Length: 455
Image (cartoon, rainbow, N blue to C red):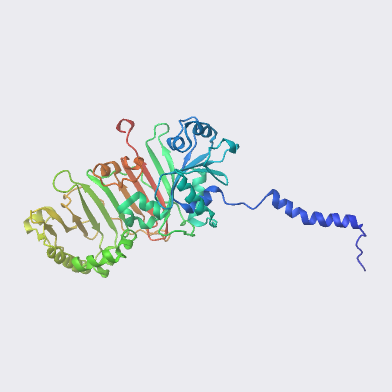
C-alpha cells in the first residue's frame, strides 16, 4: 500500500510553512522569557536593603521628601500601593537610596532618577548614582538559594536583607562574633495594631555568601511565650557550642598568638573551650570601677582533667600579667566552700579590685559546671539557668539563644551606634538561631518596644 499525500497547492503549502515557523516566534514575543526585576538586579549591589509597606493615607516618609522634593514626593507617594525600599550601596559609605515601583507615567518623574526595569531608584547624590550605574552595567546572575528566598521576602512583605558589609557596618566591633550570620534576611511582622509594641522576626542567615542549600527540614526554632532577663542582666547568650561565635576570631593570628603566649591558651585549650554547651551573661554593675561584668558558664561534663590543666595554665598567665591571687577567705565568700578537686580562684589589681576568676557551680541532677568571670563575681543564689545540653532531634543541633536589653545597653554605651534607633531603644530582643552547626540557619525572634509613655 502506498500512502499518498494530498496534492495541496503550492500557495497553501507555503502558507502552512509560514504559520509553523512564525507561531513559536509570536508566542515568544507575546510571552517573553522572564527577565530580572529591578530588585533582583539591585540585590548584589547593596550592603543593606529594607522593604516597607506603602500607606498613601499616611504622611510622606522623610526619605521620599529628601530624595524627590516635597511636591514630587507627595504625588508619587499617593500612587504607591505595595512596597517600597531603602538601601545602602555595597561599599558601605554614603546615605540611603530610595526605590519604589515605576509609575505609569514616566513623565512625572523628576530629573536625575534611575529607572531599573520595574523600579525607580533615587540616589542621594550624582556620584552615588553614577557608581551604581557602573556596577549595574556588569552582567548579573540569577539569584538562587538564600538570595532567592531573601528576594522573595523583600518583594512580598516588610523585611530586611544584609550582606557581610552591611552586617559589619551595623554591628561595628561586634561583627567578628556574628560571622555565623554574615548574610541573611528577616521578615518583620508588627505587633500591637495601631500602637506598635513590638516586632516578630523570622528568616534565615548563612556563614558565607551565595549559599545554595535549601532551608533545613523542620519548623524554625520557636520562642517561648515570654522570656524575661534576670534583674541586672543585660545580655544572655546560650547554645551547644561557642564555635560559631569564636572560630572566626581564633583563626586570626593577631588574637591566637597572644592567647597562647600570655595565657597558655593554645589550639587544644581553645578547642576545648569552644566544644561544650555554654551560657554567657553580661551584667550591669551599679557601683565601682566597672559598668558591666561578664560571666561564662560551661557544661564541661564528667572529664575535668583537661579543664584543670587549662585553669593551671590560665592562672600562671594571669600571675605573669602582674595580677594577684585573692586570699582563700575572699574566694570562699564569693564561691562557697573551697574544694581541692574543684578549686576556685579570683585575681586582683594592685588596688585590691577583683578583675576576674573562676569557680565551679553545682547543677541540679548533673555534673558541676565551670563559671569564668571578668569583673566582680556573680553573687551566689541569683537565678541561674544552666547551659542547655546539646539536644539533637531529627539530626539538628540545639539552637543558639540570645536575649538582650538594647535600651539598657545603649544607656551604658554598649550598643553599636549604627543600629537603627528602633532596635537600640527596645526593651528586649530575643533571638533563636538553629541549627547552630550548619552553614545555613533559621532565625526566629521578637523585639519588644517600650510603652507609648516611655518613648
